[in-house]
Image 1 (cartoon, one colour):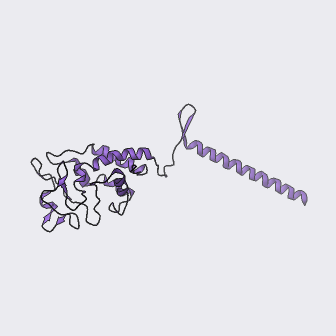
Image 2 (cartoon, rainbow, N blue to C red):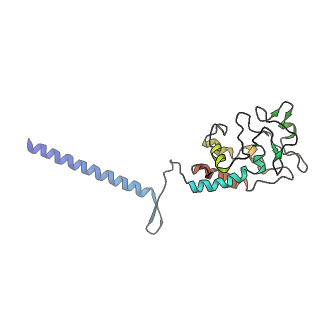
Length: 216
């Protein structure tokens, strides 16, 4: 009986050792599969595609480009701190003094669409147009005016301040019709400082690398 028990223990130990070796080999194989050779004797781990990458340096650098666009008149004029939109290259208060209204489309008879038609009106400094021209609504003003890069970055990813947008919706917002209108200004108005393609690339880079806010 004693010999049988000893034999059983020996067999169990052998099985345990074998399983350990198999698991170790599997781990080494997986590691090898998830690496790539970049130069002689230099291996870099390929990140798991399911994990969100984070690169604070790349994220903050990309946001600098995003911020330059959001602070331009083409964006900031419709994101004022008050209830009157801004106007012109110097972002002065709108001459007609229209008010935001609950839905952001104006108040009483003075609606944004009265002057801002579906297309840009012809003529120098005539009202720019878009079918959905409006300010953010009164319950979520999404102010750009006066915001530092740090403040605006934090605001943009806060669902309570950004129109309840998650990551997917924020990325999609780069192609929103009213956003695109910033690159189709009426005659006499300047374009944002970078192209829409460059802005979109920076916007997505900022978000996908962790949406870091620059230091205050």
